[in-house]
Length: 69
Image (tube, rainbow, N blue to C red):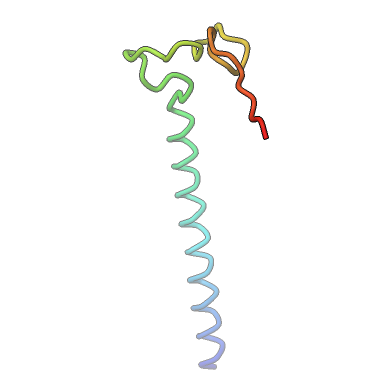
């Protein structure tokens, strides 16, 4: 009988832990969805070439460098 109570208490604690993790994940997901990470600091200026209009990965006016061996 004692083993049955111990197993039931262990199963209850596991279910309680799973429920707590599920609730924390839901809160975290809602918190992430509420924030817009695309433009975190609208008051600061972006460096040249990193604006929404730059299509290449390099800033304009920069040239590629090559490594010579």
